[in-house]
Amino acid sequence: MNDALNHFIDMNRQNILDDLSAIVAVPSVSSDLSKVSEALDKVLELGRRMGFSAERLLDGQIGIVEIGEGNETVGILTHVDVVPAGDRDQWHTDPFQAVVRDGRIYGRGTLDDKGMIVASLYAMKAVKEQDIPLKKKIRLIIGTQEETSWTDMEKYTRSYPLPDYGFTPDGEYPICNIEKGGADIMMEFDISDEVSGLHLVSIDCGQAANAVPAKASAVLSDGSEIVAYGRAVHSCQPEKGENALFALAEKLETMDLVPNKLLLLLRKMTAAFKDIYGRSVGLYSSSEYYCGEYVHRNVFSMTIFRAEGSQCLVNINGRTAYGTSGDEVLDRFRQFAQAAGGTVKDCNILPAVFVSKEKPFLQALASAYEDITGQKNEFTLAYGGSYAKAMPNIVSWGPIFIGEEDTCHQPDEYISCKSLMDNAKIFAQALFNLAISEKSFK
Image 1: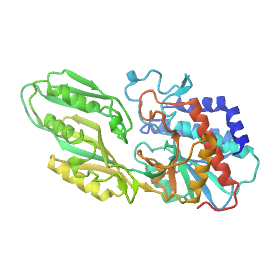
Image 2: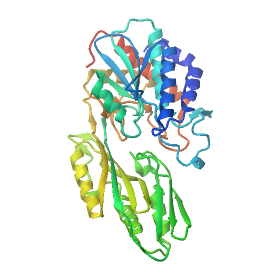
Image 3: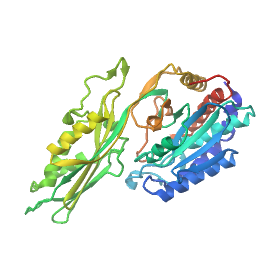
Image 4: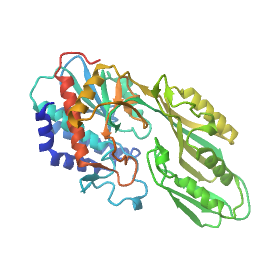
């Protein structure tokens, strides 16, 4: 272990917190492209101040910060866009004003993924400060649409050379060499009808396709509004939250409403997706293992339900186990939508990830983790989706340590200040070991 790397991170603790606060202050929700661009510019300017080369690519859809030379490139894949804050009433701080309190830094993006951008930059700076010639390139790749469509990374992978190996600090420790696949299936239904008596007119639920909604509201024909609340969590593990749409459906069932098309559709959808394991669409995984490796099961959650006028849009966010094909997912949902009187309007499917434990670069990551934490590395499954799906030989690694709370996509998102510094130290050690060595880690 290189103690000088750790010392550099410790000496820059306040700078790390200040720089993260400045980036959090830009509300770079994926849909607000001007703010996403502003946040990217802040990151690139920070990289330049540190003495790195930094540039915007693809009209600002991707940012690159790079140091070193050599025939191999170590990639660090991050993203500057964030999910919406959601219901502000559930936050105890301003989501876009970083607050340090009780050893934690709160704010949207502190954990996912702005905190890790800053940790990565300071890790690169710690390596640079050792003044040892680097035998490999280190390239920080900053995306801008990770929380939505991934159009940024799709264009980058088609247009530029890819890193030989690397990681994305957008999950948890230890090394996640297996990652579940992702799917967003948007279904459209015609709900036009003419009914008399008190009936359901509209529903508004969900802001992000990859977050269990915390608030759902409905408007009735007499103009009254019904509101229900849940608990937002990342949709990769919906069982940890409470879907507000289900709470709304329960409230509406206590009322004497005329069962129009919208109400009947709500009943059908809630009945189908209260079970998160895909039985309703024929995608239940019979086993949690694939060729002896733990891959969990297919999981689905209803994250958006918007109905107004004659149209209703329903988004189902899926997390598929390795071994489930994208074609199978799409085919099953087309059948389900048709049976429910609708169609699949849009579908975005990303494959599951499997990287062999024997890869040399993974051994280097494992060594850095063990040196800094004192804990033995293990290989594990990542439930969420990350840019590891975008390129070969990329794994999800960090930032959440074993036993820590995962507040991604939740109100009061935070990372502990200690964990932020420890991540920077782990990254610095791994990058140093990879970059100063002459040998190949492919």
